[in-house]
Length: 114
Image 1 (cartoon, rainbow, N blue to C red):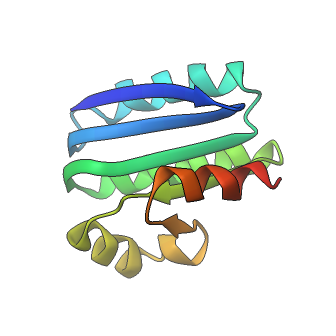
Image 2 (cartoon, rainbow, N blue to C red):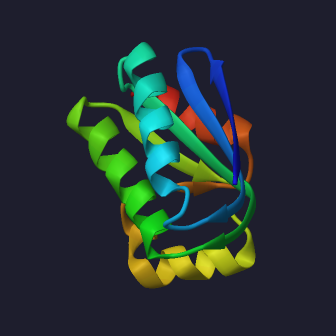
């Protein structure tokens, strides 16, 4: 699993690549939380374009970051979600609380509205 972190106009954009499973979730969670502290937990976009696999610990990572950002009155969005992940997010109920956008630009625009 690889992760790229960018800050765009005060929004933390995290591009995930590879398999998001229990082997890597803790490290990724800690890195995202450190980076969120720099942007004051206000806005987070997770790009799933390069994610080839996600298990329940990956879902927990997404939900945990949503709770973290929301508790600081921020906003979060997902983007570039492939068909298999979209089905997983749909079945898990994540789509009811975290919006999904086709690209980073639209996701960034949405979270900046906060």
